[in-house]
Length: 162
Image (cartoon, rainbow, N blue to C red; front, side):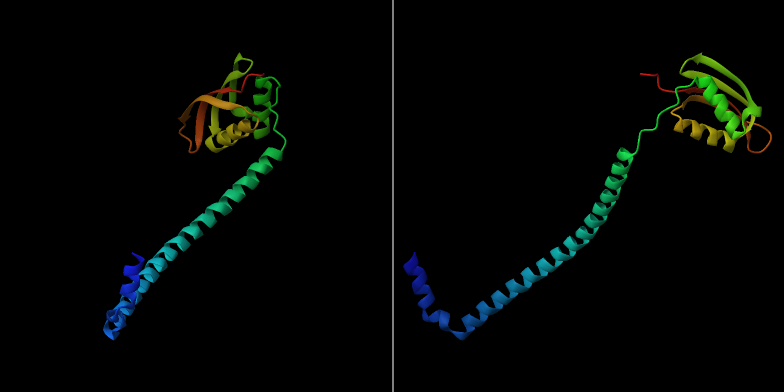
């Protein structure tokens, strides 16, 4: 096999200018094809790298936020009587005049009834209760004739004490 290859390389046919020119053209065409393929691949990869860099920076921001939240002290829910807590929060939000009733179902669940209350004010009050770890279990809201005013009946609960 080695001897056959050696004979082919030493043959006078390979020393002809036309054969050398054809081989050179073939090598040039192959080089151009590889260069074009590499250029396309590079363009695709550079676009992908930009996307991955953006994702990495978002992940770094999220990791920083997670670390900040883990380092922050856990908010402790008020373990006062739920009825008292709701009444206090309603007074602080200026909703006490609209608060018609607070019925206690158990230590961690109550039903509140508001007469005419501004919907935005009630939503802000409910959001503030979430910070106190009190959630809305069920809610019935009816629009009143006055714009933005509603009547609300809601069942509020907090996690049972462990």
